[in-house]
Length: 293
Image 1 (cartoon, rainbow, N blue to C red):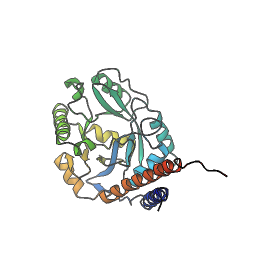
Image 2 (cartoon, rainbow, N blue to C red; image 1 turned 90 degrees about the vertical axis):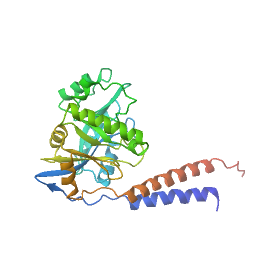
Image 3 (cartoon, helix red, strand yellow; image 1 turned 180 degrees about the vertical axis):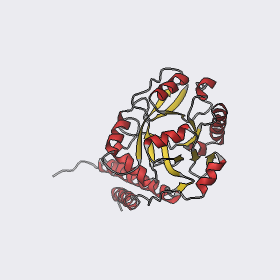
Image 4 (cartoon, helix red, strand yellow; image 1 turned 30 degrees about the vertical axis):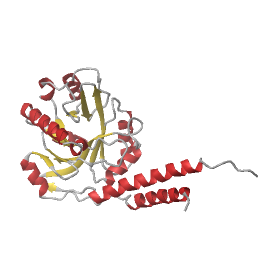
């Protein structure tokens, strides 16, 4: 078997595996004590911007990930997010919220439910005030100790903070950073919500860490109201919950739909196989010597 043939087989295997897994899980609405529990991801990147998937594809990926709502939050712009919301009106599927990752050297802030870009060249407290002026909610993004812009004035006005983020699986130090930051925020604002986010850019990890939102109505307004009032539970990819023990108990009374770990592994494998095969075909295809007729 030639290297080029092997690469073609790798590519074909990736495409076949990805196609077989390309289906949305059945969604069973979960209602507990008068609340609907929605699965959400409020830190997602897309093209055009700093993500790989276009807005039209992102919604399908969210559906396959078992999400009911997500926010598109590119760095310091809302163009892709507004495009995603517009496209969402044409089909049924997860709720799409316009957002932004307000990116400052001293802090990163997730703004959800906004219409205009928030100026990142200002202190965190001022940026949060701008988010609130637009009717949105402000969430501290991966607030490790590397960020020094979180003073008490900012933390007491936050609506939430990421307690579950993929970095908690990379280091116990990061896990401790996020837990301690949320606890300090919660002391200053008891209604602050724990948030689980994937921060996905390229790989198929949407919803890897997620937020379960206890809403009174399944709408954008209902989601924002729940985050403002602390009615969320964050979950990491190991299924560990972060949040109010009473809400965790309510959540455990049902079984929210989501992507199984095995499916996630196979979807990653399909991506690696397809790209490896494609790159290999290009490499070996261009390395042939000259031909003469």
